Image (cartoon, rainbow, N blue to C red; front, top):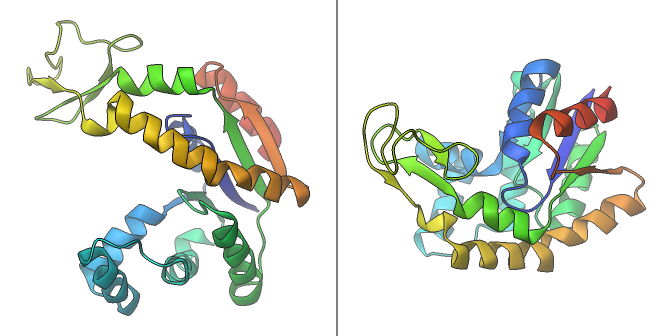
Length: 215
């Protein structure tokens, strides 16, 4: 069974690769952001608790996030395996996750894969992204440009450069990754579970390497 965590900086390609993995291996992608939004919307006990922190502009505590992940992983569609997306982000979260998986679900992580991409490549990838303000179709000014500058091929809408994809924001996100999340590589390496993949190759070649690891 594949129970995995994907590591890598923002823009490394984790989302793209996860989408393909879930199709080919019949497992689900579990996004903590999605869980959080859904739990708040549905008004679950943990969702209400999380909303209290979010309404105050505070980070949702690790124990609440762990509870949400635990509940999500107990759902039927996770029975064949899962990819954790966006969690854990720190050593304490990783430790809490390991404890929860063993104690409450009687399982453990089978794979931790880190996509290795340097900062310059990340900045080039993310600053070049554009999205249609109408239909939300995505483009890249270098790798996947529209036929006409700043005009969506799909609906003719205006393409915008999101704040999240501007260089200043990206550099801050990379700093957080290097200061906090990147430390997880040593944590999982010490557990002899970490595998690294060169995320600068083409998406097709990156995926081939991931399949080799998972098969």
